[in-house]
Length: 451
Ligand code: URA
Image (tube, rainbow, N blue to C red; front, side, top):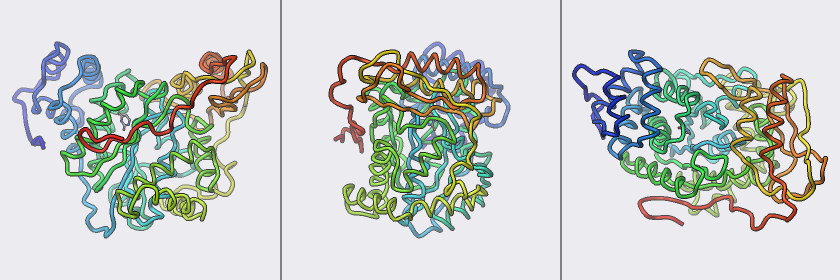
């Protein structure tokens, strides 16, 4: 592991920006100095934004990626959870549209007796963020001080928080900056961002949900597999058990896109219902978490166990307990109308008859950001109530004039922009589309081991 104390004499941000811009490899000391200076507030956003863009365009070597991950990891505390006498497992997604599985998985896996110490992020680019979703539950606190994070975890088996001044502070700042500077789509930066906060959590094992398709940051399966391999290798280097599932993001997951709307769909799944694709993916990911956490002897058994935890209401009870412990209003579980609601709704209608053949899925996420569900600038706050409810998914028949989606909005002007975008991004064809894309494309476990 790179020595976190590496220093550079007379460090100047401009030197590392120019070096990366010109395609030269940075030393781990230079990367460490940049991360430290930015975390300490000694380098301004604009210089780091320039460096990030150079890193996106020039790429990074394995050594640079390792140095960045290590510097970000050691920017804050690395949790020691050895006081908990159970296995500790987490899951992280590379980001998608309607991807709300974390909110199901943390309580579901905790209900099986595994500790899930989950550090998540806010919306990033066109993708939604777990923290923004959780904050749509009135009162829910995602800024837990370390001592409280430990207490919640010990009491109910799962805790969900953001990067803080204590844990992964470098990712907290870099993540917010990347969100609004077009610097998300780099496998190296994504790897460092995800693995630095996950390795700070004190976990034994990690399941990675690496998205591929038009709504993912890595659009092709080849690019997604590259990112998955990079993260699995990083985990191995740090002595953790890591499995990556390449999962489909060619259309939104479930039917709801938008913070409070997605929480409502999470509640449906925790009640044993909800849309098939979302429920199936939650069960698949939970099964791997249970398997790595040694709560079952194989993934198939893990799936059965996960299904039972949903159907018995035990996963929902865990979610209720976590919401209470994190100061949220648990009454939303019994009456989701207590979640923030948008003032207006309007349908986006089909202009021709046929079948929904594909989504430009990234644009669905962008439409949600435009409505106010995500950020255009770092300082923006999100509107928890707005979003999109899909009425049709790929393969379903549609008649001209039928609703394809319903926009939940609070501003007429923003709804008009989102509506134009949605009309363009849902493609209707005369023929029923061919074979459905699988939910799970590949499983990557360690160097070269895939199935
Ligand atoms: N999730 C993260 O935490 N970081 C990224 O860069 C992308 C997805």
